[in-house]
Amino acid sequence: MTMGDVLQERELQQGERPETRPRSLARVAGYALLGVLFVGLAGRLMDFPIGRDENLFITVSRLWGSGDIYRDFGFNHLPYLPYLLGGLYWLTGTGHLLLLGRLLVLLAWAAAITALWLIARRQRAGFPAFFTAAVLLMGNVLLLGGPGMMATNNFLPIPFALFALYFLLCGLDRERPSWTLCFVAGMMVSCAIGLKANYVFLAPFLAMATILAPAARPLRSRLVCGAVPLALGGLTAGIPVLIAMATDPEAMLAHTVRYFTELQAAYWAHSTEPKVVGLAAKVLFAEDIWTSNASLLSMAAIVALVALPLLRRGWRDGLLTVWSWPVVLTGALAALGFVVAFVPSPSFPQYFVPPIPFLVLLVVLLRARMLSENRVAADAVLLSLALLALLCAASRLGPGLVSFARPASWEGVAVHREMRELVRRAAASSGDRVATLSPLLAVEGGLTVPPEFAAGQFVYRVAEYIPPRDRPYWTTTSPAQLTAFLDTDQPSAILISGEEPLEQPFEDYARSHGYILTQGTRNGGYPRLFRRPERPLEARR
Image 1 (cartoon, rainbow, N blue to C red):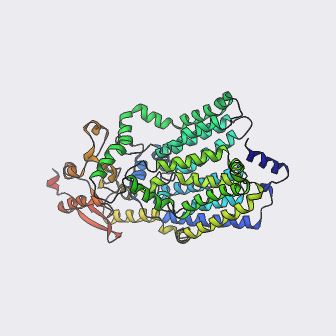
Image 2: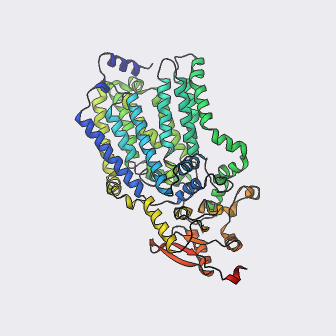
Image 3: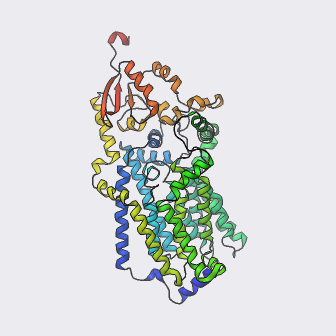
């Protein structure tokens, strides 16, 4: 027990129990404001334009169960999102694929905010700390963009990571560590990693926490009641990955590890598209993301909460006040999140998400360490930063309130309606086989996507770089082989979204082979559906 723990315990014994005070009108107003912000976030999420990555995640999830997600459909991440979302599609039987995917992400947002509330309550951090953390999360401009709005694997790991820390805190913060809670924490860690491998740094650091954090306990107790159940929980929730690795290890490695280290690297090395490569360029890119809006405000809050006890009590006593294993663990996770963001190349905004939830959580944990002499000042600083975060996010969350009230215009609803109407006007049949690099639009319209195009452009664009040793593990064609592939078995339709640079050869093929064009109502007549004309009777014989 540190000096800060002793002082806090004395204050509680003297009757300082901030969490048992009656709920004030200000607190009710604060919860109401958070509710309004969440509604604005929900409206923005549901109205957010369809993204390229959703073609991969949603289409493969929709096709899950009809083939292997790696060999047949070209999935290139760990399998938890197709299993989760595909299971929801199977249970509900819905054809509104994008809509359900976005609802899943919205549920993840609600779960992440709930985890912050539970941790703040458990740590007795006070309502201002939770309110500020929730605003910093919902007001983060990066998360209000594609990484937090689209039905991909970028935001979904965050609630699992936060709940892993919550259950670990509950499991270790007692006289004898709770075997069950540590087991659940391990499961949460595996789920976060299974959704996005970038969060793999969670596993070793939470494992070290179970061994090192409760230093006053015997080593055997730390191992048996902490480290062992954490590992068993991780293995239990990791069974889907273990099965995939055991049954078809080479295919899984070809589609995950070697896709990003070899195929992706080769494609971008030859691509003329703008890209962020090299450490210097990545640092500038990171500076634009992390040193602005709510990310910068989160770091400012951390600095302020550490500085307050230092100014009051000096360096030694001040550091002892804020020092605790949850603070150290969360700070280490945030630091590792910063490091992991620079590993993929080229860089994209979604790679810079991992440290954000831990920075927000660190605000809560540091506020929980404040002694009574610093609490008023700490709350004033936090609420001031929360106000600034609100101002930064108002231009994005405000219009979301209007969007929430217009469900007919939500992207998932509108895309489904427009694609069904386009298929009807084109006189195409439900289930017609369609060649496209936008497979999500096709499946929303009830069309059938061949396995070669299930991953959209993500496999198609790297196909020519697949080495001979890995070709048996892929079902695809390439830009150089497209014409021959389409000639072999002409598709019933060809769909052009107008969003992909690689689509032009598809449209050229459709026009040169007499496909009949039906135009959509977006973006100057997109999407465009080309339907193959009926062959004369004698041509069929």
